[in-house]
Length: 292
Image (cartoon, rainbow, N blue to C red):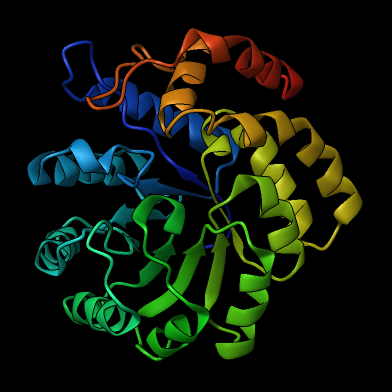
């Protein structure tokens, strides 16, 4: 059910900062038409950190409604507070997501024993599948392979989004976990190699901009066809390299406005509009991917 190109979907905002649900529905339809294999709703790219819990849950609810069972929807349930993560988890049980994605608790730097207890407590609050999310570059907290292996023993913890960009991590996790444990790259630049080495897919920022190419590349990589996957991946490389020139989702929202896929590129403070110094290189990356 969970494999291939899964978009870490942006959340459209109006100029006044309110969520633009009409534009959100348009984005969902765009991704389904373009062959995206799944959607992560209200993750980091969806600006979860500046949403109230009410907004967070409403966006997930509407994405589930718009998708209407056509592809899987994975709801973000991460927090640096275990109690808040449990509350998000219980509320999303009622919404109908297919799985949940929980980033490691950020800022408070828990030890590995704390991470184990955190994820065990969140998983115990639901029977819906849970996917771990390790992105130490943003959280200052690294979910180590041995810890992942311990958590993989929990029945409804089914996989991990591993975003270190270190392909050795995939080898370590696969060596320690059962073959049924799913592995997703959270790093677009190394996503192709991740899948060719046995990963199950990519939870992708680039997918927002070039969903058809990402889906095709993932399908080739998962089939073990390096040559065909490499041809497409080369087209995507400019986006993979440049969509993080400033904090995500600043660059990706700017690109989507250039493609007329966002009615408004607004972000919530403390994020601000993309610096003009990066405009040309992002335009070149979009031209390379042939989305402009």
